[in-house]
Image 1 (cartoon, rainbow, N blue to C red):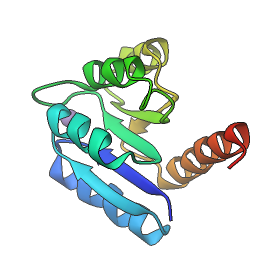
Image 2 (cartoon, rainbow, N blue to C red):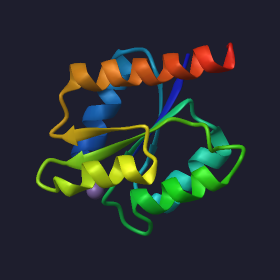
Image 3 (cartoon, rainbow, N blue to C red):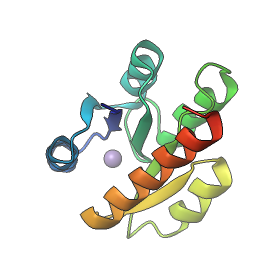
Amino acid sequence: MKTILVAEDNVVNRELIREMLDAWGFRVLEATDGEQALAAIKAERPDLVLMDIQMPRQDGFSVLRKLRLDPQLAAIPVLALTAYAMRGDSEKALAAGFNAYITKPIDMPSLRQEIIRQLEAICCHSGK
Ligand code: MN
């Protein structure tokens, strides 16, 4: 079973995403701010991270930067959750090194497709 960390400060979004991931058969970890996300990633080494850009304590960009500098964590696929209203965030997210971005409100079939795509990419490069 693959583990996915959902880092999102909005409780409604977080619960919605958690329920979907759960229904799709993933093990789900949650973080409500950037500091928590970083700690959970270090402790649990999730297979993939869904990360909100706008979070308290540390935003998604800051957390991603730290992950990419850590050789143990650098290869974990991280998908940015960006608000539709903050259109520039999507381009910034890709430029910053997020593997992909998902625009909120989230289209669940697209989210599922992107998660599977990212997990398969990991699988086939590393030969796992
Ligand atoms: Mn947020």
